[in-house]
Image (cartoon, rainbow, N blue to C red; front, top):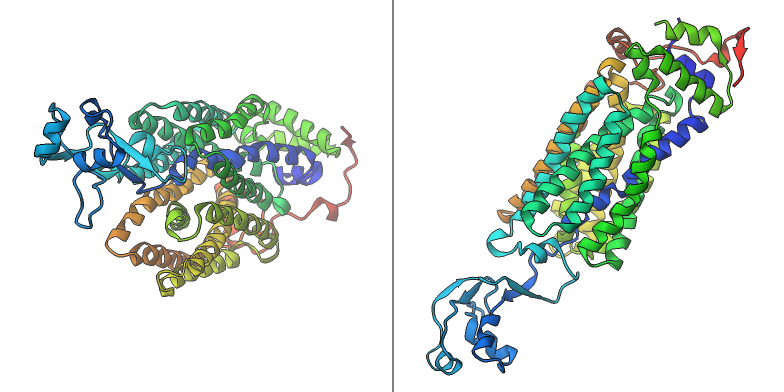
Length: 514
């Protein structure tokens, strides 16, 4: 009996049809990192003082120095307080000068910021300083929580409503709420809007990989994951350039959202997964798509074969490491623009290497190796004396390189270990485990207030343990995607592919050239 993998070998495992589909699905990943730009390009402790312009109504001719001396208390080091001001009074200016002000309070009328690297950030627009300083970590964790909710909603729903629909709706969510995020007047609406962007991003991420992978044959399946990662890496490099040129977070958000308008238009023409259609018994729809794919690939498909077919947590540790390093980008010592560019630039060779090496060495040995090496690289950061920012950044970039590599292997593994009937749910659960790690990442970074080594020590240890657990995984290189639980079990015990290539078989007597 022929299976879907055999059909793919006839119509082309990675022909023009698959390539167009893959690029269309991967393009949104180029700009997905842009959606969290407002959480990355910030100044966590900007130069500031309380806005005390109230005194200008009593003394409009005051110089700035006089205004500050009369309205702001001083710290122990002699500098003006950044979080306190004197309580405003309705005295005239002479009385204020004579008697002075002594009672202090929090900043009542906002802050005045100076020496900013950016024109505006969410910190300066929403005054996330002093008592509200930890809200940045809250916003980061909430966005990651949105990703988990997206996995929970759109992962399992893809089993019932299809991979395509579960990809289209999240794309629309990302577009709509990325626009509203840029227009939010206060931090609470920003929080809700960015959470919904996370929901869309999570739903799209988990489904676009499965939708593209299920159309690709065993020999080229790593491209389905690798190209998705590659587009994201290139997008990170572009993000560094965008924020360097556009220092206003709202404008940058709107500019980066514009390409999603194109995605929202073409996403409705993405083909459904023929594997899923066959699994749901929708054979005629699957047949039309298979014939269409064969026509675009300019490949014949045997009628007899087509009719026969139609009748029948490791992710947690990876995301914890990746996002703990990423959200701590401003603390590595070098320029945030340069570090962002390095993170994105080195993700490109990481992804390209994974595409190539996965088909040479297989999944298991690479998974163990890159996790172990990445864990060691991050652990070595602890041995670098404070102040050596170049060495720390190099180790962080190296660790991220191997973590991204391991993420590619994980994504391929998730497709190959589970049968079609539960593959989407399994992928969603794996992604949820990963995003829980990304939620914890900002909170882990907060432990640095007790000692700077804590976050690095924790994420390094977890990665080393995860690499050791990889010894329990089976090898799945060049094995067909299992269609049933029995086939998945056989794949775990077999060391050779289930089916030979059709090139080793005699040609079919009856073919249809499309």
